[in-house]
Image (cartoon, rainbow, N blue to C red):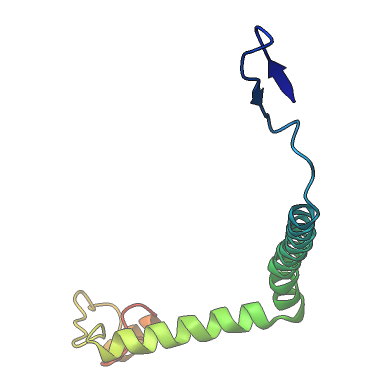
Length: 121
C-alpha cells in the first residue's frame, strides 16, 4: 500500500496494487484444483497417446508375424480381380494370328486364356 500526501491538510490518496492485495481464501483453492485437473488431464492424454503409438506399432507387426497380412492381401487382390471382371474388364474374344507352325489348341493352352477371364489377373 502506498500513500501520497503533500501537506498535512490535504487528503491522503491511497493506491492499491495487486501485490498489496490480501489473499482471499476462496480464490486460491479453485486455481489449485484447476492445476490438479490439468495435470491429471495431461497425464491421461499422454497415456492415451503412448497407447495409440504402441497399438500402431504392435498391430501391423502382429498381422505380419501371424501371416494374416499376406492372406488379407491375397483376398483383397482376388476380390479386386473378380469385381473388375464383373464390371466388364474380362476377355471377350481370343484371336490367334500366325499359328502356321503350332495348332490352335496348343497356343490356347500355352497362353491359358479363355473367354470371360479377367484382364487384370
